[in-house]
View 1 (cartoon, rainbow, N blue to C red):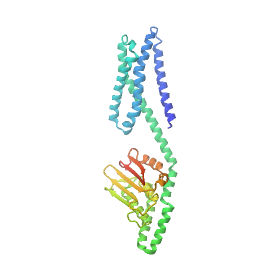
View 2: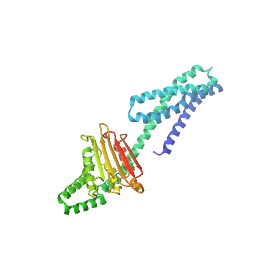
View 3: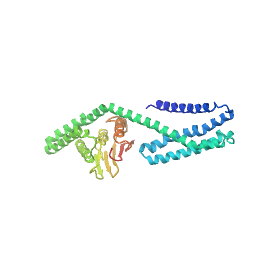
Length: 346
């Protein structure tokens, strides 16, 4: 939802809210014994119990309680925080009434203190309405994101297909295997089988929502082996898995785009540890750390090629909502990413 639409919703709510209280004052003022002093008093009371505490509670619920607690389904904590906000709104009403209705406190003390007591209730009502509005906006935005992702589904599939059948990688690999056939047919056959396994993985495994982490690691190993054909430098790339992947599941093609980009944009294959890849696994997290050395002048192209960081990020938000963190950094001659998956997607 656009910011202008959200702003319009907020303005519309507060206009309606103020009109409601103006109607209340108008209804009360119809009494024959209603004086000008009474008008000032009730206007001050409404400011003290409805306007200022209402604004405070509304936006505290909106910007603090909803994103920090309710959206994370922390129901008990949400109720406690809501009560604390209501009580603090009550205190705000006490202070506000001393300034807004002080001229009439002496003659309307009983009514004034009764108004203070209902300030907490009005604050809660404003808070609940804030949660409804924030919930609707969040729901609408999630629907739009999903629609956008569905519209980009073909783009994703084409990008994945391009990754699967990258002509540069495919032709270079086949050419290297063809040359190797003349020197060492047995070794060449092993690489050809590895390429076949990669193609099979791309065509079939990626259709599943989840695959064993071991399969993703197996693919990465075979992909690295095929990339190593292009250089005689045995220390060109390092790949390490720390922890036990057994029994862990992962969405397919989560790590692979980052690794492909690392190979695609590392132009010097003669240096040691040009690419460093590490997967760390513990009970609650799976982390990918990938760093490659790159010419600073090529950083722009690194960020704009492959599946694209924006598209990858949106895919992660869909399959790992609130369960991942992605950091992409480049400094000097290094480009690195850190992707942490908190646990398996639902």
